[in-house]
Image: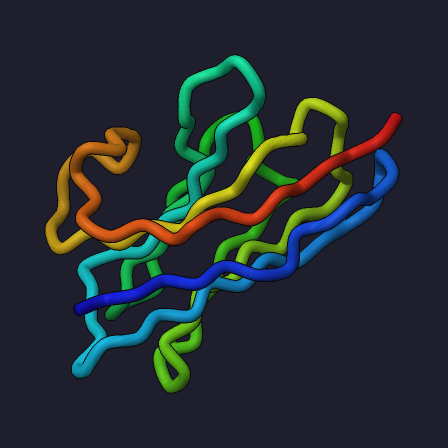
Length: 124
């Protein structure tokens, strides 16, 4: 059974930074790719960024390009999301997710395991 646990959320002022972590468990832990999604109040869950587990190839939503950076450390089964220059519109619950195959990274239904989420609040 795979489990994903996010951490690192919090309250930050606009222009600030946060780093989220997502630790995966389950032996052996593996993935085709890991991703971050977010859900703002009253909105649908949206794709933020993804990284392939073996090669580290990254994909970003246009809304976060140049501000967010996704990375992974396969030795500790952890994926990170470094968020810089945060804006109030980045306020959301952030989720990490695992996918077992390539396809459309933007589709939540193509991910098989999800974390419980971590709240990020950006004040203006």
